[in-house]
Length: 207
Image 1 (cartoon, one colour):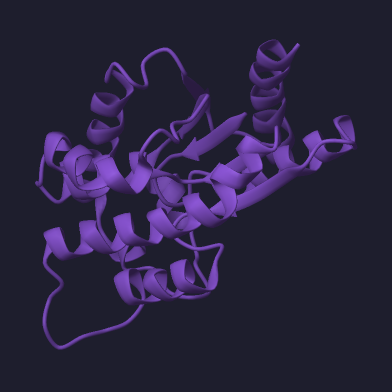
Image 2: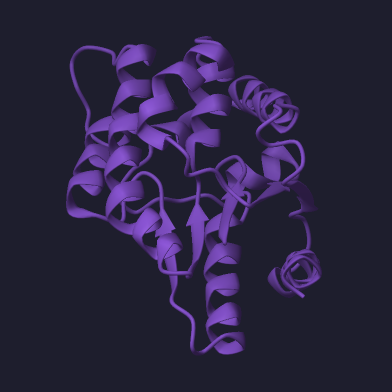
């Protein structure tokens, strides 16, 4: 099973995806369970992450360049970590996926969802999520609690940008490939309360 966490920066997806990873490890001790993040989780994919969203250049990175970099990182991590685990009958918990590119580069950067799907077609191939947990909440609250130690240029974006990101997530949730696996979870409240909402969705699916 391939479970993907999505949401704007500061939505709590990194914290909650790790909690779910620990919960499933305890629940299924005999199954292979991994936690990955996009972009990242392999040496090459992590280097692309730093190039795409952390390093400062004199020139501005074009959105189409940005989209291809994320797709390249994705192609590496899916083939070296995600797909082998799924083929072995394991469970993958992912912090982001190609859906982030739909929301960020497709909608907020103005490239369009169709173009992002085209760019990611060969990167993703058949590796589509079995469940998408979209954590939503207040933009101001999310921005106030976000911090990426490696640097993330998107954390410096304002409300207008993230309103577009959230609109992109809504459009993505309506795509034929995703509409049946999409779960909206309120990310507001304590970590424990939010995780209980997630656990309810997961247990209902896995039982």
